[in-house]
Length: 135
Image 1 (cartoon, rainbow, N blue to C red):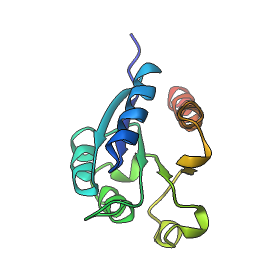
Image 2: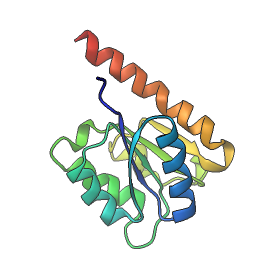
Image 3: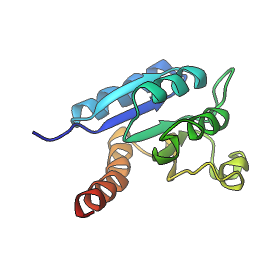
Image 4: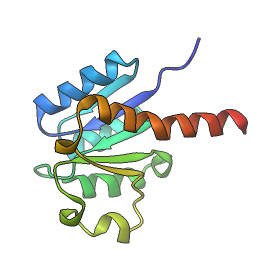
């Protein structure tokens, strides 16, 4: 039996979060969702995912702050992160690259369909899985 890949989504818009949850689940992923940064940090600490999809613009604790806290967790440095936001790269906070908080990819939600997002998430997961098997 193969292990199900765990995806964590931190997204404050419940409609968008549920849309991605359903799309990833239909592709066989185990999906956890949090609707704000603080809940997301807690979720990741309890259910260490294979991949984290993270929105940047959220009330109370934004995505950058949530990611900083996730990176401080035991094993938090190892979680691959894809920013999934409506901010273009030029609008993104500089801290993403300058603070060394590690982002694997950056996806603008409005530019891709949910199917295309799933496909983009599968690419680094496939590479990581292949690498782990060969080690």
